[in-house]
Amino acid sequence: MIEIRKYEKNDEQESMAIWNAVVATNTHALHLYERLGFTQLGVIPQGFRMKDGHYEDIIPHYIELN
Image 1: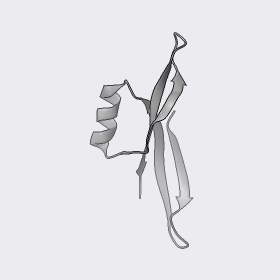
Image 2 (image 1 turned 90 degrees about the horizontal axis):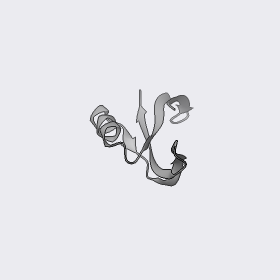
Image 3 (image 1 turned 90 degrees about the vertical axis):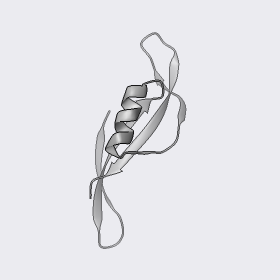
């Protein structure tokens, strides 16, 4: 799920960012987000349940729009 958030950077400036999480085994998506300039925020162990019931790690990403 992609989420766009507006937030205050400081008292006078607002910014917007796009947030998304990518399954760690999805190397094509990880490379795409890297090429687009997204920042990885870490790893959430077993954060996504796959269709067959097993869990995979997810890697949240964000990029500021302003």
